[in-house]
Length: 356
Ligand code: PMP
Image 1 (tube, helix red, strand yellow):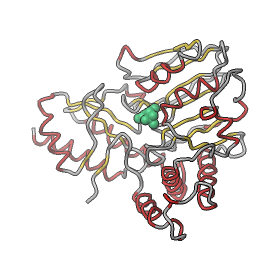
Image 2 (tube, protein in one colour):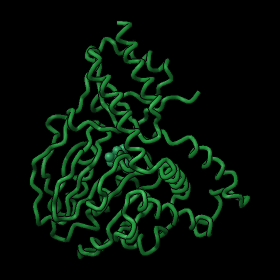
Image 3 (tube, helix red, strand yellow):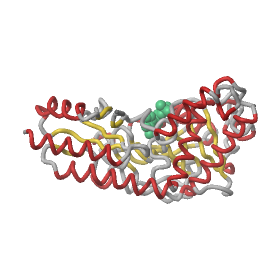
Image 4 (cartoon, helix red, strand yellow):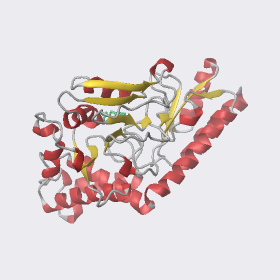
């Protein structure tokens, strides 16, 4: 029987995506060739790329609004660098919200390009909440934030109003909840949570914000070049893009983001209710900022660790160990994780209470 997969990423994907992508490796689209042995310029793969790019904009409600979707290489980590390269003017400045390890990774790269202002940081409290009531300088080239902090289990529930372009790292909650995505000028996400396997990075960019920096941008790092070449400036990572398309098709069939959002809320409510009820556990993130994707929690008494770990492993749960910088446990409840898996975890938590 398949495990209840709580991995933080790469992570669970819909079973039908595994089955269809396995089939495409053997015989893609009935053409008697593997997806892995055909040209990325073949009509079959060009159709995959076009559908995937269009479906991203459709699911996010951004069709016809001046946005382009790109499937690039390099992970979200390369976007930490591409964003300032493409958006921070020579002698310009940018504003960043520091909400965790990945946000600070983005800040580290931006600092090489110009003045990088940290508008607020929750670092002194080990990133257990999302800072609020900060001021964004009106003369910055853009504001950068991280919608969901995968390691610390916090999630931005609202986004600041500003007149400057807003850039958001949505690696760990893209396609999981309804937002007005047109409030963002650039969204990026490594595929390996809600979109597909590792190996491609989604970038959704409003084209009008590009071309304003007055600096030379190396071709591979230049969003405009990727747009002009329809996301095929060089050989794209064909397999992760195909598997991402299958995941996006699965999401559309399910009813799109509003449908998955309801399921995600049900999963998160079920687990957080138990974390708050069960005297053996405590959540580590501030309640109002709790992530619906990654729930972080600890045992109040560490001496119960061995018993709890045995119980969840015996129940077929995998990937529950917390990130080393937080400790404890992290239950990643991405789109493809069924509600039944969360019920299994909650039952194990209740079981621990009965055993102690
Ligand atoms: N940002 C966030 C929010 C992440 O969760 C991660 C990876 N878990 C990254 C960036 C880095 O992504 P990648 O490994 O694709 O570079």
